[in-house]
Image (cartoon, rainbow, N blue to C red):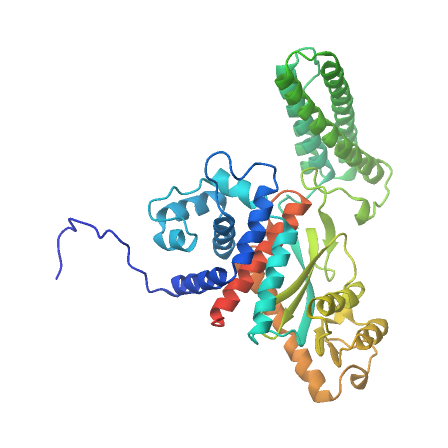
Length: 455
């Protein structure tokens, strides 16, 4: 029967028959059976110092964990996540928001997610792996290790753009300070710095760029001097004036931010002088590539593209689950992390894996001897580099099987990057970078467990 119009809508939305809805239902069952996961998140939420027994009702630990999984599984930004939580009955049911409950706003979601630490998410992942081990889904006997790079949310850096960023940010903070403390005097050189940045970008030769860089450095040093004086004036005002504690608090906060960016701007000025004026090659480890994400490293992987972020070392198992992840500082060679990754597996499972497969970059005779000594029976480096097959594995067949098995880690890395946002982190700061990475890993493992019909 067909009608022109539906006069009365049903009160209860039916459960939809869709693969994504079934996966969410299975993930929900896993989380229901493991309430300790929500307790870990709750501990982070209340650790911020706000009493959980006062004020309006906030998101529970369970709701924060479930909404974070929804965000990472779908690649939503906060605006999109807030909309789908308000609009979708399936997501509301999964996140335990209730039929008539208020949907969290994007600011609420962001504030709660940023309270969840990377260490907490790593502990959640280990609890999931322990449960998988108990049900013979993943026992960690056979592992594969590889590395990849996760970008920070910054534009490709140039010396001129970093100098311009430094000038405009310090000028903005001083404008805010002057609005509260009129005695602060400075000249805003933002427009001049922007013109020099654009001129350097379009200059045809290094001879044309050098005079422009000199003027941009001059502008930057003037701004740094003014920022130093402004911070000193704020400190003096905060010491002498006790009449308005709120005003003093705002000014002190601005002074902290000014001094933070002054230190970063001085590094930018120094590395620009060394590179442009002195012709020196600045080592990658000493370069600052962003004043907003100063933790970002310069990483050239396999002599291909240059990345600005952090190197990730991942261990996966035969089930496809991500067993471990290490976010490293700098650009360490893969060979320096081979032993550490197996040691972490041994620490978690109280035994070393029986078989381990590595990319060729992890290969070395020292690594082979140390990993064998830990109790690993068969090892496969995809490129042996002077090692005999008999030294690594019990037979040529076992070695070839392990080498083919290692290729599966590439699919796992691609899965994380395409579906869970691990290719680029949009959260600011190193702690948040690590938390974002682990949130993607936890979400990927929950989805994989759901697809494996985890009990």
